[in-house]
Length: 219
Image 1 (tube, rainbow, N blue to C red):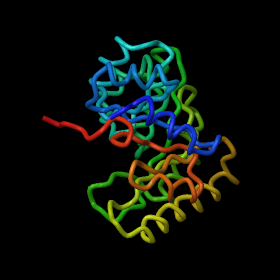
Image 2 (image 1 turned 45 degrees about the horizontal axis):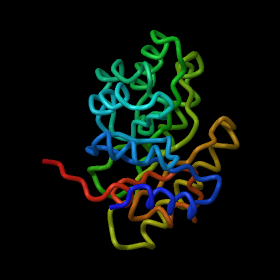
Image 3 (image 1 turned 180 degrees about the horizontal axis):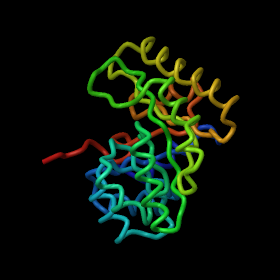
Image 4 (image 1 turned 180 degrees about the vertical axis):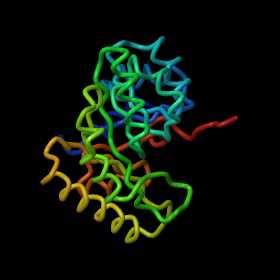
């Protein structure tokens, strides 16, 4: 797997307005450094402990994105350095992020995860719940978190039409929300298998791992 060639391929393929998040979970620091030397600066992890260990040993200008499900009791470990949390699915979690960001004298950017897939295994909230969070008095008083967009994961299926309809639905939610909440700028959808469909449907951020770093070994 030529990591640097893969990074260059995606950089040349993706439109200028689409950010590439290189999903580096389970991958060693050497692989991340190879991507870094090819110009990649945004890396995504799904385990806070692993991301924290990596952040302490790798270049300081890396932007770390938390892309996995977040447990509230672990937020404190990533609060000093995390750049963007993709998968916020409750007001309670936002409150915890705000509290920990305040303790670290910084503001943490977040996205609300909307459930668009059919699988029960996917996390997320529905559009009405997300709107409720953004309109809530609690959120309006938070000074250390900023919701900058929405995130969603399509059903894991070979049926491209289904994936496309799920992404189109999320884009329509995003467009409606933007009228009411102009601070929403990012729409994170699309992974190695479906990023082309996601980009065609209006994604501004794709999360690509195995196509850059090779298959993962979870042993």
